[in-house]
Length: 312
Image (cartoon, rainbow, N blue to C red):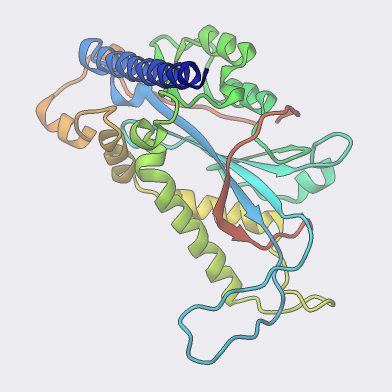
């Protein structure tokens, strides 16, 4: 009996490994077809991903021995707040507006018109809200509507992972109607084949931390309970806007190369190809904004923990 169970387990693992290898092979063949065979311009190859940012207020003071290189800040009790940031880029270094998902009202899941009216939202940011601040299927559907024109003539290729919201029929149907072909990265291999994971998320997060730390240096005032004052939603919108603006096109292009989606950056391709056919012209985007609730969730990023205020 033990021998049968062992053999079955081994066979199952072998079958899973073979399936993953096949999935990876199919993905790489698809990438080769898109760029190598179809000669698709890098502006029409898009990568999207979302990440969760944890939010927690800190105590006003922390006791620590003099001279230590690191001071561990003790967090007060209570559930951590969060928001989600969705990022999308093209193979030639263009950036879609960063999509921020805040936690909305308990009943509607949306930020009130009064709060939204007070927010100053930069052109490179879009603001959404849900009950949980997760990226969900409704927001995914709305993001697609805002990001891709209805009359797109040339096929676009959207490279994404197997996150639940990306697999919804509504999203896939809407993408097809707008001539966007969704290409899924093999499960468990986003660290290898997703440009955002390979070389964009890290500098973006570093920029986000820097923006927060610069803000904190200028604001040491405490609340009545002795906590440091929290940044508002407006502050976090500004943090994300600045962090996203500081990610340069070369970083994005190199990430596509590092993820094996493109053979080389577009500035090198341009040196080899003096002209590009009209049907391969760089894509121009248009955007706008809104959302809903679902059971979908994104993975927490424990490396990004900040204080947060709901004062708009």
